[in-house]
Image (cartoon, rainbow, N blue to C red; front, side):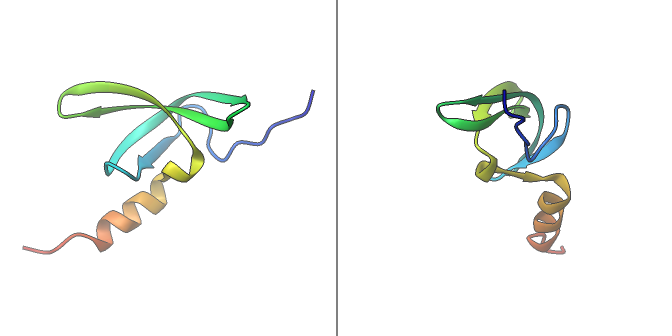
Length: 74
């Protein structure tokens, strides 16, 4: 059986690009869809758990860097 290298690890915090929230990787999958990550996050008081591809999320340091660039001082 081959060894699969994943871009993110279980329990790692990631930024979810489409909705600009932080989530946590709670499961990894490799099947006919390729590598996928299940991300758990809260949005508007509701807990979600979604399977996403690596291109839909980013490492937390990259996410925070983008957020800081998009922040407008008051």
